[in-house]
Length: 387
Image 1 (cartoon, one colour):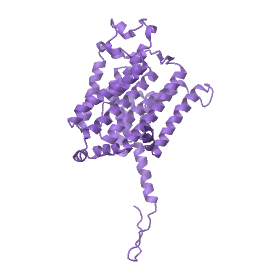
Image 2: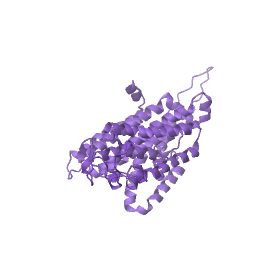
Image 3: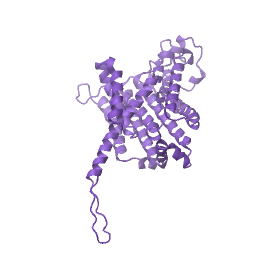
Image 4: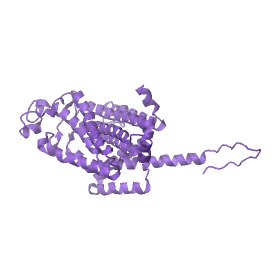
């Protein structure tokens, strides 16, 4: 039943995008592992890891598009959900180090030994098991989104006020996780990971598997998001976005629709963070920085808000440009990013994908022949040309 529901949601564009992601999930690891460095089609491990990071960003942008593009909730705090999922995975990876750490403690992570912690805090229990960590990757961001959304949406906080509150939440978490007594590594965060599911995290095969898992999860999340927005539930979401008061007057509990979508989006962001950490090799409070959440908004706007595919393309394009531009002109990157956002706002308000889709839709209307009208009273009406 669930499979049929998901398959019915796949239109032509979404189907092509999902197929491409699945092909990439297979092809890139094969070209990395099955070809030598001298082979012309060989993909180096560092390139694969870099694009794996881009795909986690694409998943984060997709999560934001679900609430911003289809529900009208401009969240400036999705970086918090991303970071919480990353910390949940980082805690699991730290527990896997065991006695191989610098201080050789079989239970306490190195930063706890350095800070003279005597025993493992209660909230670290269970993170030596992957299934528990995976559950927390979903539960922690989802629970925070539920509690935050429950109070915000019931209070009918909207627009810029909601955006400011989400950014305040992110900044509060940033300050909290910077504290050494919180038990999350303080300003240094967590790093020096060794294993994941018993496999060396630095091995080429492990990194190829992480890349493939990221591409597959992105394809699955795209399918789920498409199923949501193309269902009757999704039609109500669009109504909430475009005319919330009218939707409420029709009898819909608007806050329930917002809350459900916000929680699902937060869980997607948490998965993105969990896939990001083992590929990058570190998680620290800097991931909570408000600027990170603003960048996600830029990726989504550049690609095309409300298109699902657009934010994926926008995240890859902007971060690819960031990698190139920071290598050539590192001191000018922030100016270039700000200029890009201004240019998109002025000249491509629908984003790259939205603008291209609108162009082809207009061409289709212009070139499509108009059927002759039915004759009435023996008079042949003129065929009107499409505008």
